Image (tube, rainbow, N blue to C red; front, top):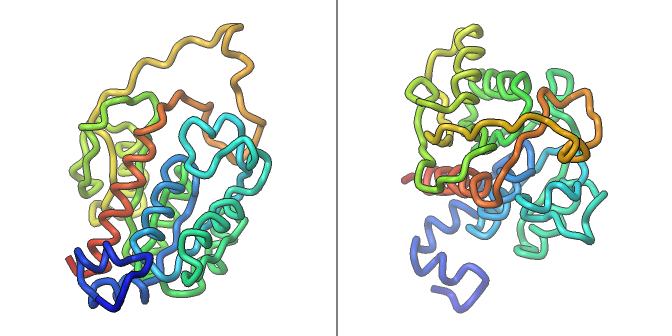
Length: 248
């Protein structure tokens, strides 16, 4: 080892060659909410040298329960800006590129104008997930996609599988159906939970005030989440990517 540095413990474990691979790697993350924020920070703390983050939303008070960067002081600020600032504090040598954009067929050419060694899909909107996966496959960019963590609580049921081999997860089932309609049967790695989601309680006057600000780009009403399930999905996604970048 070449003296103590912020990645000394990482180098002690994986060696200088693997650490240099991570330093020279480029990863882009779409969505830095409960899943994506943990994935982004894990990649940064692992030593990935170039990280692009794409998110159009602002930090909301309701995100404090599950988003790594959501604090009393950051509510109202753009997700991508807050996450970028945090990552630069973790590793000032890393190139952190935030894009306050909504991923769509119109923004895809710009957001994917450069090649990345890996793409992480931590978005909620199904249409965006499908388009991103299709685009990455056409460009031969490896992608891993995070499935829904709402209404789940068992941390031991997080799994990694090809989309064609997932079970139980409704998000994975819906995504697989839409991908099949686009001619994609398999070859998409996803992180998901095999836990049956809890029943959604009927709306009543007590929780009517919990609806977030209206946004026509959101595909469904919000569901309940606990702090650690989205985090575990994001951590698992990042772990898979780090191992892949090192050639494991």
